[in-house]
Amino acid sequence: MSDATAAPVSTARRPLAGRLKAALVLFAIFALMPPLAAVLNDPFYVLIGTRILAYAIAAMALDLILGYGAMVSFGHAAYLGFGAYAVAILSRHGVNDLILQILFAAGISAAFAFVTGAISLRTKGVYFIMITLAFGQMAFFFFISLSAYGGDDGVALAQRSTVLGMDLLKSDFGQYYVTLALLVGLFLLCHRIVGSRFGRVLTGIRENPTRMEAIGFSPFRYQLTAFIISGCITSVAGVVLANQAQFVSPAFMSWHRSGELIVMVVLGGVGTLAGPIAGAVAALMLEEWLGALSKHWKLFFGVFLVLMVLFSPRGITGLLEQLGLARKRQ
Amino acid sequence: MMNLFVLQLLNGLQLGILLFLIAAGLTLVFGIMDVINLAHGVLYMVGAYLIATFAAATGSFWLGLLLMLPAAAAVGLVVEFVVMRRLYDRSHLDQVLATFGLVMIANEAVKMIWGTSPLSVPMPDILSGSVPLMGPLKYPVYRIAIIVAGLAVAAGLFVMVNYTRVGMLLRAGATNRSTVSALGVDINRLFAIVFTLGAVLACLAGALVAPILSVDTGMGESVLILTFVVVVIGGIGSIKGAFLGAILVAVVDTLGGVFGPILLREVLDPAAAGQMGRVLAPMLVYILMAVILFAKPAGLFGRPA
Image 1 (spheres, each protein chain N blue to C red):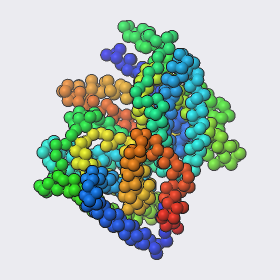
Image 2 (cartoon, each protein chain N blue to C red):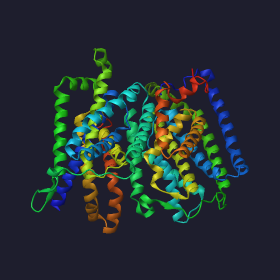
Image 3 (cartoon, one colour):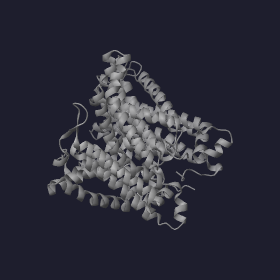
Image 4 (cartoon, rainbow over the protein chains, first blue to last red):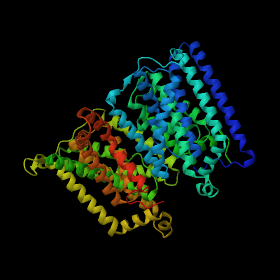
């Protein structure tokens, strides 16, 4: 991740503003999607759209640590699972409020991220990737053996969540717009975090941890805090996904899912927040499209990934730059 | 109780040997080339499918095994030449993406070539049956053969790494890659050798386990993560660490699943102990990893960063 933003200080604010604009355009397109689907008489798109928006939340959350903190977490699907199971567990006990479910999901995620992050962040590079992967797998196995909630088979949800007693999520349209609202809200939160003093310190640690330590910042604390925030935001995506599918199973947390989240982030552009949102749209649409073409779509998706990495010297963002689709970084 | 303990200990040892065969290649690839390879578990699966095919075609497990080895080397060489070679000087993120792509390609290709239904490999006649161990206890000959074969490979690796020229280059490469390269060693050739060696060992593990497991597309996945745990515990780049880590992980995994609930029953009521044991047993290995990393972030035999 040596190709990180090295813009001169005087223009440092500009890319952020540009990305805010790009994100707003994206959100406007998202907002227009359901009426368009209604015109095309294909309401199925709204349901797929909700799924895409949920993954956009997760990809953006992962970008917060992957892009701005250079922490390649390969266990982020675990937080999707915590979000999904928060819905399943609370609704079993009669709590159907979305806000309470999100708070519960964030609570579990914060605890898990605190413990596993504290251990993983003692290491770097290849170690970090493998350890986060292993902890993600640990969570996966925990829910597989949790027979009270269906174990391997998962558990179906009786109803969608309510928001402060209102049935906002009951229709697919309502669910879509609630998800969009969550995405916009969380994007603004991430945008604020990245631009704040905390975000600047995090970026500084990504660039040169030794120097940051020398001027008095503890890299560990900042990285761990970012890791926890990212986990909590990812769990919100899990809450949405559980509602969208009305079904919760450990499949949400398989390590392939973690890999797909990384693909989304890189596809859209590491360290841009708005990019991974577009990356989630691109990756899931590519999946849908390849899936319609052939039942062996994973083969083509794999070939696509390998070719992208091999033939673009600076990764996928570099390919976009070569094609003139993105402005070159200085 | 004692019999059960010995039996499970041997099962753990057998699993550990297999994990070691896979982890040995992985730890060298990590240590020497600093490349993360998610597709290593896939090679284990490919080994099993190769021997299933060759054994069925020749009608003999041994001929199948003999044909599997050069085929595995060819697979390793091709993957190294086509993909891995281009990843050595890339970021870890690029390596993760490309090898994740390889996993998808391989899983799907295996489904296309061999279908989705599991295959089975007949056990060779000489090694079927079981031998008396102690008292009424019997143990399958084939599992003992796996342990012996694995130990022999481990010994061979030990000699190669510590007493041959290639081994010396491997150790030097794991310590300081650029110095070795500056001294005039063709580092690309060394990488190709290491990667191919690792591929053959992983395929061998898959081939050895094929007669006692069903050969299916998911088999590489579960093993991959366990192997990562082994490599992390043992310390990246250390063969000795991989060996001890593999045995430790496998024994904890096997014994924990059986004796965890029994031990819990001492402190909890039986129903709660059973429930808790079932939940905790699959997590035990990861908890072990967490504890070891908490004490030694570079693993048992890793060099501190």
